[in-house]
Length: 261
Image (tube, rainbow, N blue to C red):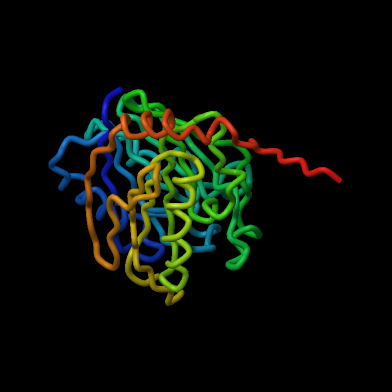
């Protein structure tokens, strides 16, 4: 199995300014000099985490979708991040996953953050997204999803790495930094978390803390507070050996746990 090279882009976002954010990420991606397989952007990377969907939503033929497909082809790399999409008179916090050959996959955020009324503005998704890259099975989630271990459960090693893209505020960064290793350990997989930095239009501050965690829960990379573009190589042999020598996955309960009465 080949190694997997991933690039995390932790950046400040221009509040509710799609064109400015696309231009900024265009330059950041162009600045990546190393060969990489997957480039990961934050949640709502074109707007920041806003509930102003009526003003900012795009269709699947809009500028963000067109840009990410084009950029993936140009860079010959998978690129993913989420944007606000309107479809069938409903709004979705939709992760776009562009493949270098031009194919586009999507994942709609399952768990909507009720503390900001996201559940009143957006519709939830109900299906997982797993993408094969270099023989690796990669599964994508969005922010609040990380708090729900049943939804992210890695049954029978369905995926090798979980990618969480977020707009996770600094006042709850302790949770973010605890949950990433927890998800890695319980699912015996790599966890990659990409968050934003700076301050949004609601005055919320973001400390980033984008991270790479190995299947044993070790922090391989973590960066707080600053803009950064970080490229790292993940080794499949580390997963294979750990799953063989500590085969806890064989005793997993799956999605349904039944308790005796």
